[in-house]
Image (cartoon, rainbow, N blue to C red; front, top):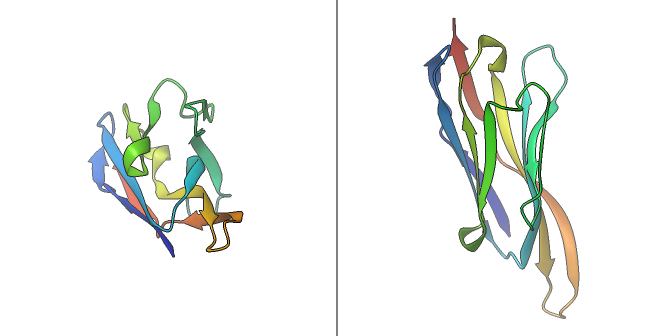
Length: 124
């Protein structure tokens, strides 16, 4: 019903920049929050940045000042602009979408959808 697909993961050098894209499609009535999470091997999954349906953003301390999350509300997309990348940013980045779906009976439900993940590797 709903698909979430990330793109833009790549291998970059420290100090470089990268832009990740997240596209949600399908039976979408409205997307509430969209967010980016990352997980490195042996580490806990952490929230990197989130953005609400009205544009309120939140960032992890490690991302603040370097990363910017944005949305294209008309096209159900979210982006993560990453600047001044560091080796410690290396991780699989996953896009999460809190999607509101309307059934044929007109009832609204909210579901969590995740993308497949995008590998970001930052070399020293």
